[in-house]
View 1 (cartoon, one colour):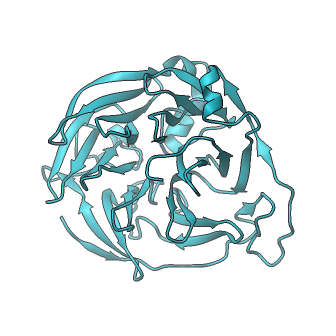
View 2: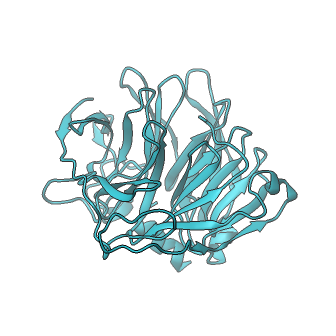
Length: 361
């Protein structure tokens, strides 16, 4: 999701681009680090007591096996425009996440706090296509390289370090430019799946720069072939089940605020989708946010950002409870040893300790 979707929720192939790395300390007036014992990197920073927000709604006793009874929603940092797309980098033990409007990827590391990892993270030219210029969803490929939904440049791309160049993985379907890729997920065979809503275009579906009539879910295979797999009104976050037989895709449409579940065929294509969970009623009740980014634990439980915060579902689609942030919440990622959930929520970076473990740990 981006700020345009957030406002709506509150009211009801190969090219190389050189990018500068600006590893710099964030001014205290811009980003505020909250939780002690973490150290703010500004000279004037003083230690602060840990801050927590919201609460954990427990609708089913099964959630107690996933989130401990004494869990808190810790605020690690705040002051962002719209935090998005977190990914944990085990090699270095730090979190990366996007601020889409600020066109920045931030790095957060325990004991060091926040620094700029990459700026500009997305569009760096003249005549921007809209206000959302930065990267959005982030992931890592099998080699550990950063791969992004390059929202502002209307492509999916790999970042090559240490020079921080971008390699375009895909920017067109049938010769027409993507709208603004939003989230990305790898299958274990190396195929990249991503969503392409119109949030990066100022006029959304009516924008004159929109070349595709649809908003889709795509796959890029190892040969670079781009395949349209499914269409949704506003496809957003996506994640695979542990056995990769199911692909979950969020739809951030207040009129159809659902998570879809698609069968994944052996060749990587998708079977007919079914509604995994319908949160349209929650959106109508003005719970903040819409279906957005999601992650899956090793048991197949979903941690899905949506109306109210992070909704927790079992593999059968039963709503077990919600990490209630009280504000629109964009995405989440497992980190540390796999039993910590980092959450990008509006202007904040949050953390919740879990007793379950995410896929990949």
